[in-house]
Image 1 (cartoon, rainbow, N blue to C red):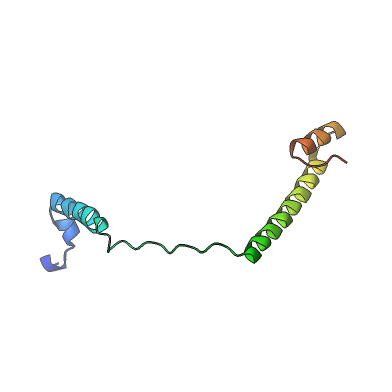
Image 2 (cartoon, helix red, strand yellow):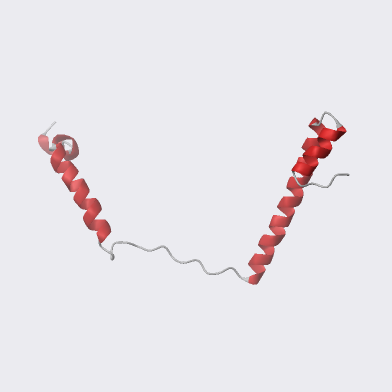
Length: 93
């Protein structure tokens, strides 16, 4: 292998490599024109807010149904079932 084919990061001085690395970090990130700010997301519209509320309500309904089924399946007594339902904020039947 010829010296021109070698990776300079592996064959150069570690101090030189580290100094180049630090210069790259400190100098390039300090310049504001090199830094690209992410675009600011617009505020959601009323329709988007309503859709998010509907999605949250459906998710809560599904979660409550799942929790009620799990509690009913694995509770060892009706007292334990009632306590678990109260603990998770579900209505006791």
